[in-house]
Structures are given as C-alpha cells and as structure tokens.
Length: 304
Image 1 (tube, one colour):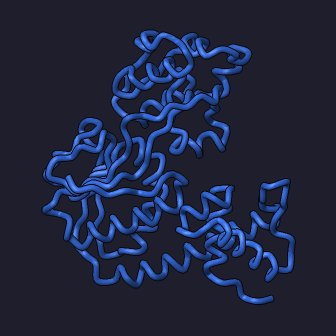
Image 2: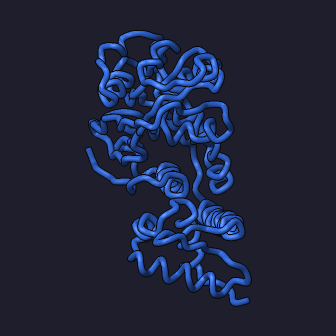
C-alpha cells in the first residue's frame, strides 16, 4: 500500500470532523473539487472501502471513520512533537483568566497538551471575579465572554455562542415529553447573568420574551450546567460546550430551535503582554486546539 500524502490525510480528518466537502474545503483553503480529489486518491491507495456515495452526498464508511480517527490522533502526535521541540526554551510564568463555563467545558480537557509542549512555563489558570471582567493586573491573558470591546488590548474571536434549551433526561420524562415550547416554564428556567438568554429564545419561537423573567440567575455557566445536570431546571446551553454532556446522555435538547448570542468568547491580551514568549506560545497553542475542536467560522483578530 502506498503511503498517503499529508494533504490527503488532512482532507480526510477535516471531512470527518465537518461531514461535508464544502466545509472541509473552507477550513483547508482549498476548492471543493480539490478536497474531493484528495479523498478519491486516498481511497484508491487504501485496501478498504472508505467512502459511501448516497445520491450527491458522500459519507464515511465505518472503516473510513475508524481510519479517520486514527489519522487524527497521528497528526496530533506529529504536531505535538513539533510543539514540544519548539517549546524548549520558552519559560517563565503565565497567568490565564478564563470564563468558568469555557474553562470547565473545554480548556480543562485540553490543558495537559499545553504543559507537555511547554514544560518550562509555570501556568496558572484562574476565573474572573465576575463574568466578562478583564481588568485584573495580575493576568497575562484573558479568555472571556463578551461583546468584543476591549480597551487597550489585542483581541481575537474564539467561538460564537449558539444556544438551545438543555436539561436532564429526567426532567423531560417527568413531563411525559415536551411537545410545546411553553412547557419549559413548567420545568423552571436557569439563566446566566440575566434573563436575556431565554428572552431571545422565547422571541424566536413566537412567545412573549417577558415570560423569561422567572427562574434562577447564576453568575457563571458552570453553575448553570451543574443545576441543569442535577435536574433543577432547564438552561439555555451552548451547543458546542455542552456537546460532551449531550453525547454522554447527561443532558438532552428537547427542541431544535437555536439562537445566536450577541456575545461570544474572545482571547484578549493587554498590549504590554503581547510580546511575552509564554503568551505568544499560549495564543498559538489555543489557535491550533481551537481549529481541531470547533467547526465554526475561522478565528478573526482585531486590535482594540
């Protein structure tokens, strides 16, 4: 069997992650025909059937998905090896302030890869005193939730927030199913910071947004998810950051309707810290991890 090209393997991993040729092409900055060609050539070089064609759609076979998972791990290992060698010589302290929901749902599941790549960086991760706070003088880099307006900082968009109602399966079972949107009021609403999250969703399904002014308001998303997991009500959950809980069956989405929040997650660095080697290392690492994890529009940068 011929050794596949790295370009073809990257095309496979991107296609497996997104599920469509056009999204893979967008991520790799290639044409759709180029991605399709790479997949066809890869399948030709393998000793098993990798792709199924259903009408105009292309999907991975079970063997193809398994192979794509192995390839993804191999590419991560190669990337990690390069990062570890690049990381030698980068030293010093680094304090990162991270929004609690993002920290517990995503960052804490990845951070060992940063410490392995940069073993000489003394990393501390803290949570802000209040959601969106970016004024702590002891912090080198902020991962924060807000509208993107940061004074005297260099900011990068990390992740848009798309939300949908989530709750424990027991809550749905208690009602015998949830056929109508207004049934969420019977479960008890769980809010982040204010009533805006549920107000937007009520408007999107044709209900009075004023109905959202009930329930419990929490100061961070980690507390919201904890209450939802414990069956204390129904929350507007980030469909990306709550993906693991839904995959494991701890949370369910009773409705398909989604709303995009006017706020998002950003990485913000004070101008005085931009050239600090440990900060540069963390920013590069987070960009790479983000590209592997989230199939949303590419990160954009803006100086403010």
